[in-house]
Length: 298
Image (cartoon, rainbow, N blue to C red; front, top):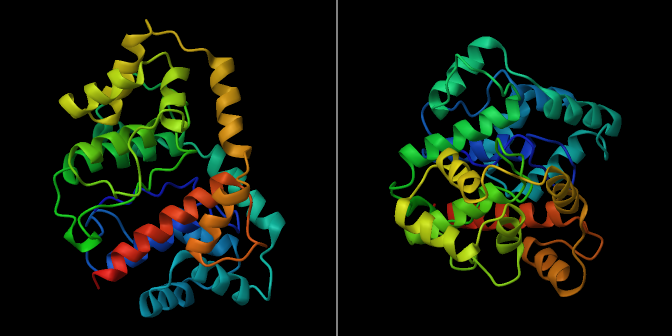
């Protein structure tokens, strides 16, 4: 299966790529990672391990032999680092991931997989290209796959802070959830649409009626690139960039409080000293759901 945790996803340690590497190693270990994806590439996987000052073979051995949940893996990382990671090194690593651009050969590969015209390159961001490539390959290979190894219904690992070519956080996650619910493959604890949550709010932001989006995705089963094109058609190709930037900042910086926070912390096994960041809490909740599905069927 295609790994849908993106390179910009992170947990409490705030080290980009680390959750993706963890998930790829675990899913390769049980035989469900797509054959074209290495569990530890010489690119971002090896580089995040190096950036944290870890030994690659030790990391892979630990993950393969212990199959830990994500927070247990992070705790092990901290232990290997002597009680704390090098924050400056991690921040420098994160900046490099955000700013990374693909070389020509990777542009050609990703554009081909996505279905974009490589003769007219207007996106070179490695994150955007890799994320769209993952979503396109997921749509081609996994939308009708057998999810029995993951309990038949799965949590959405496309995160709130992921975005595509339009630059709108949450929009890919909303597309994914509606699509998977239409196939009865979305975990029952996750709604594909609510009255006032992030899903209708992001659709309102881009000028799309939520009911229309749900109906379109359920009927047409579009890949993400096609869905973004449809979104643009609905609003005449006009998006409010200032409103999008405000929305993205909100999603990246908001906190969870009260019952929402305490419920997630309890679910993932953390006490009240755990994180408040909604981006982190939502991600580690998703990871825990996915991990339990993976291990329950082990």
